[in-house]
Length: 520
Image (cartoon, helix red, strand yellow):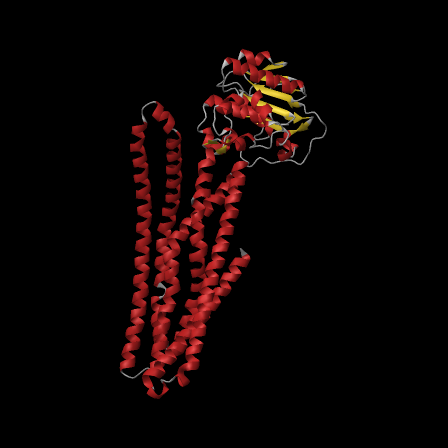
């Protein structure tokens, strides 16, 4: 950012210098052409014209370079902030992430894009206004003090109105961002539920809700546009009046012979340049305010979001023993440990705590005697295969989803162990079959089998299963449970959440979470 700001300031100085110099040179050329017919030859005007062309070229190149640097700076800042927001969101405990994911999604997908206008238009215009406006006013004061006095009277009106507009725009931008977050969240929920609505024959009713959401978004956008147009109108009117007053004053004195032609032309040519940067600032102010509001929301998200810290301890040895204090659980290599109990008692929460995704509800969780909070979490996660209550599936091929958490040693055996090979046999494209977000295109049972294949084929030393046989029929459940027991017999530490009798039957140890004070 410092290099970008320094380069932008340097380009602004070049633009300001070239603008003022070209106005002075052009005024001299026009004055000589009008007042001295003998000076209308190339021999007399050629050097001045070449200087004018050189100044215009310098200004054009400086403006191009400033725009290029602004685009690069904006892209770098937006990418950095988006990466930080995503990294923070990814490190959140699952329940906090579910609560704040809409804020993060809006910031990354749309909100931070407002920064591009801030860096490419508003900030360069602001630097130019800080340099060109006072420099141009000073030059006008040197050549014509009366014109400078008019400029100095009209000029402060623009910042005053900009401040007043800014106060209204700031609240409007914050409201627009909040409305966009709410509307996007509601629209995504509605679209995600369309398959269910269609199955129930209620899809037609969603059209009204989508229309209402679109109308609300349109009203919010139009209210914002009204402020932008009104602010631009006020600023253009003030700038036009300021230039007009200078033109009237210079014209009247020129008619009565109280002002030399070159001086009058210099003042006329420089007068618009005094107001032009401020007009650019005003025109870009509203869009830039949207970006600034998004940045404030991003930093608020980063500052107020608790992040699960990761230790640095690395586990050694070939086996992993997981010990949970509350409830008292000792999951050992070669054994299947099942957590059971009624829904809502906190079984899934304990599984997430074993992974270090959130702190344990009570007591401590240790792996080989080391507290999970002290472990190097990325290294720990590489040693764990986890089947969540709802397997995570991304848009892409079956193969990409199977290898989402890393390559599988024997993909065919993994699919066979999870009975997913039967599903693949019905797919013409096999492993290259495409699925949508969340596994759209697969039934619930097929999604469960895919998730099981991903874990059973993993070389991980610790396997965590949250309701592994959900959505499976009896024969498939039996095969999957045998595969889980075989992994334990092979030396893996297996921790399962379940309550069905077939799941409990493969357990070496069953722990009833009921009544141990674990809150879901």
